[in-house]
Length: 91
Image 1 (cartoon, rainbow, N blue to C red):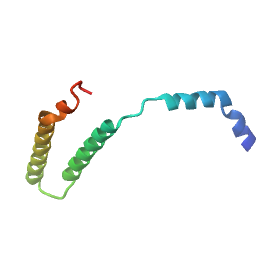
Image 2: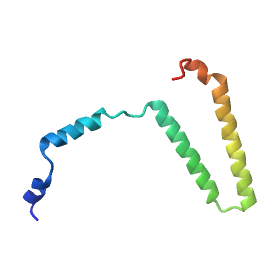
Image 3: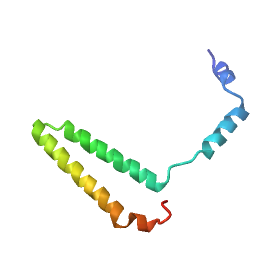
Image 4: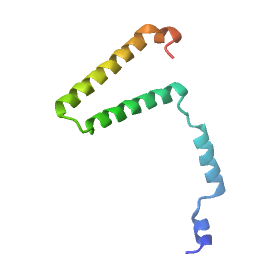
């Protein structure tokens, strides 16, 4: 197979441009969504790190429970202490 054979198998230029325009028109996540995804990823990573840490089962479960409770309280405080006041329309 030659390079020309590979070039001949490519779609027409118009189709490539149409696809590029389609990709450019797709919605991109906003800054707040990226922060939520990053925070969720950090929580998952921390949970996995705790699960694979070399400690006893009871100690690990207690530490994981304490950490999750701490995050849960922080999330509730964030929602109750003004997050809704910053964006009254619910954005």
